[in-house]
Image (cartoon, rainbow, N blue to C red; front, side, top):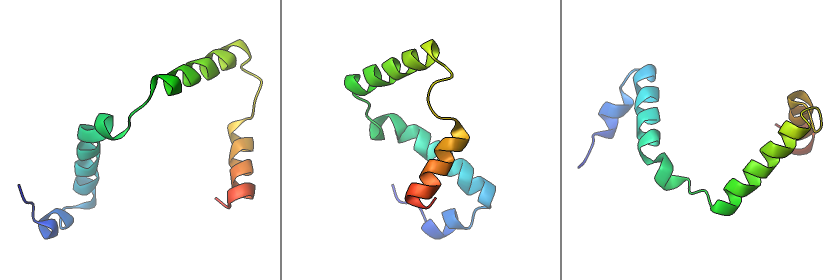
Length: 72
């Protein structure tokens, strides 16, 4: 099936965003594969956070760290 790129690009910005979100949602699970190891790692990190919610870095400190280290 072929779509006319010009017609799609002529949609209103809000319509293009809605279309992009719908398209991404339709392929998201196929594109982003998460391994069992990655899930286990995330669950362990969440458990550590729940046990010690005040440990670690605040979101502001994290933003500052990335800005200083990577320039964004």
